[in-house]
Image (cartoon, rainbow, N blue to C red; front, top):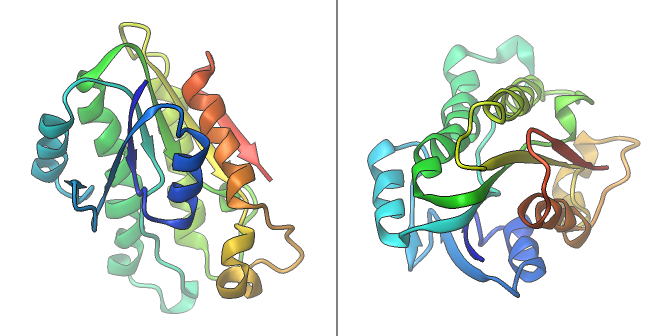
Length: 198
């Protein structure tokens, strides 16, 4: 398969690339030398797909969220997650569907906070839940045998030193284990699913 992986340079992205290394991986992201993309910009995403040509799968492990206390959160803070992780991934799906071969797939990323909120994580919970709703609704409308799923990983072991204090009592998972959810989505047959790796 020819797979576009957006967010390939991150901890999770690298693990996904390693798990799917038996396929042709096109590594994309903000800092990618070969396939640079800003998922918040329509023109940038369209330019990316013009460079990749037809694909068998699109995988997104990208997206920025806002973390901070609700008491001091401003609408502009909340919009960070809406414009980047939510609309950025939706943009990849909406524009990308037209660049997929018949039977191709789209895999987006959410996270455990869609169902298990944390302190200072209202933006993350809302954005992740919205992505899951989009995936579940879009699955019914995709044509040509296209599929769409999301993977919802727990906090990663590799990121525990930075994010552990925000997740008291949570049991982290390795990036390699989380990557299996993406393999299941890309190589499997299901659509409209949220694969939880908790």
